[in-house]
Length: 129
Image (cartoon, rainbow, N blue to C red; front, top):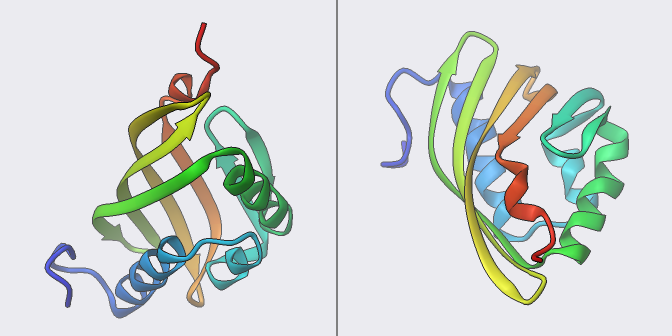
């Protein structure tokens, strides 16, 4: 178990967390399929709600729009079918490096997320004045 893992995670939690870290080491729109079921419901701060299938295009657009986007997992915790991953993010937005923290809350079934809530202060993504 990685030193970042909290104790008490199920093997399913640990596997998902490892795949989450792998995704963010080399993110692409199509790689969303490695974590998110097509029928999943995604609730994304500042971007609304969409399906897992739609998330592929949302992620591709986000990666194009946010220059040098990085997401670094910090910690995780599990509770039943829920997995919470705290992360730190950074990107060039309007020519300025911005950093922000957030948490993803996943509901996991058969190793795939069937629901995700991406929670962070989306004001950091707004254009500078």
